[in-house]
Length: 383
Image (tube, rainbow, N blue to C red; front, side, top):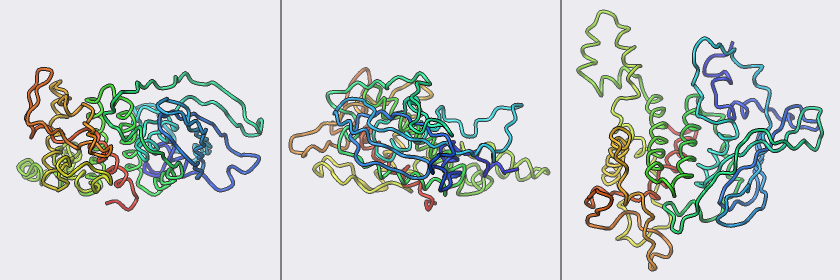
């Protein structure tokens, strides 16, 4: 029987499918089922991508500012279930759960790679083994085209600009070479990032929450892979570690450490993870006086502030500051590049008053950092 870490049942389905694919599976006549899904976006995509059991096909719909099926995902479903670990139903299983299906995983990973809104629709065509070689149209599922209200001024302008080459999606293949737990964390983080973009222009405070959670999900796995839970307990809670070490039953210390490891030093873990993989500044920036200082000290302070707002939003119902949720100012002399932080000395809005020090960056800067941190971390070579 396969172990927990190698069984396809313990991997995100699209990654298990990628690992199970063998050259020749798609030879005519095909020996596996193939499905097609529309991928909806308001971004401009070029070229096409084919790798393993997946193809991302360009529909060449170039309309601007309209959510449309710009991509068709062709998904070849490999027969990996025959090699899966038998699933029992006497207890709950959530090892790979993220609230979506394989096509949602791939759409989320593509969304993260490009930094665009992308969402999978229902299966539209199916090619069955020994079936019609032209496939059969189908309308299984009840997914509607996602709704997106195009704003006058974008909170995250980059999602509606530039063009994106589908060939860049081949980096998804690298997920075959990461650990099972990391693959799950990458997919979950990508799903939260994907969802964050869809609500960025209508509920930006929710986008802050989702992006912090995407980073924290990755940070949990990064820290887990770094060291022993007992050592982390010793570092974060030395008095508790000392007491548990004094007990006659050695197993108690290990059991407690494993139970609380992921909740130890949450702010420190979040800040350390982002700082470890923090990208260089964006290639296009506003004039220097509107640039956020891109150094460790300023970023550490900003990240602590952001994580604090996240905790207050979750536990006290206090949303992120309104000015951090507003579209950034684009001045005529900035050559189309937005300022990176609020420049006011103080801001009063909706019953709150905040000084400049409590308004570290705009959301579009945090989106840039979140996306690039996650992309840098998901590499098999990342430590």
